[in-house]
Image (cartoon, rainbow, N blue to C red; front, side, top):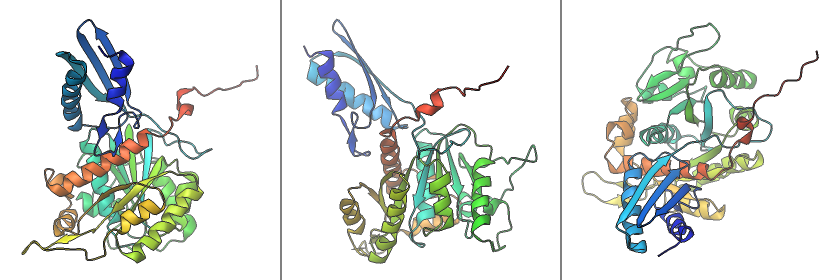
Length: 361
């Protein structure tokens, strides 16, 4: 008969293929009890796993029955999303546990489309998710979320997020006319970001995805210095010029102590809808090469597919429009990988302590 510690080690060694790590590496909480010939196991993941939890439960049950020779094995799988640490000295955002920045360093690589599908995939996994469109000059999330609704302000000071496809969202695009140009300089940009972030009445957000504008300018600098970012992902295409700018975004996050969870390679390959021929239009292997160069993970590769563009233009991103498709599965796999890497980060212990106020009598 295996001991409790040996059984726990078996569970810790189980690999979550989507997250590209074992349960032990993702810091899952594992409880093992042996009651005679009955084995009771409870696994609590640090990331949402709706759909995957049922598979994990079945596979762990089969594995433990085989390894322990016990027939009476009970396995339950759940998850708990906690608040993780951010840059030193930066205050958290009310009702927001974790902020994930999505950056590219360069425009035209599909970052906004990736951001909204990543947010929707996290939501489909069982998390409470918001998305903030930080591109003041070219907001695109209202179009992708299929709404032009105006936010309400119940108290004249704060605004309610716009709800669409289960996401809480905020964008300058909800506050201005679609064709109105934003001719603002740096200080006004950063003030607008601050107000959208802090004056929005977010409600119990597990993950707030911030869709950053291209480049490494005022918005990125403000975000990295003033906004409590739990981690970032870099979106690139395999093209050399995209990778060059993606490296700049990576270096920016390194300088401000924001962990980068990995690289998402977009438009990695194109398969002709007529003949099925596969072609690497923007080159091949660029994302993987960059990931290896900087000791990062390649979180996933997404195709250059007309369906992704059509779905986003119609206000129903692919994860919502066609949830069972291969493309949606790729987004969900990437989301699971991002959330699992965030679960590895240290807990934000400051939130566990009450504020201490000293008063003079």
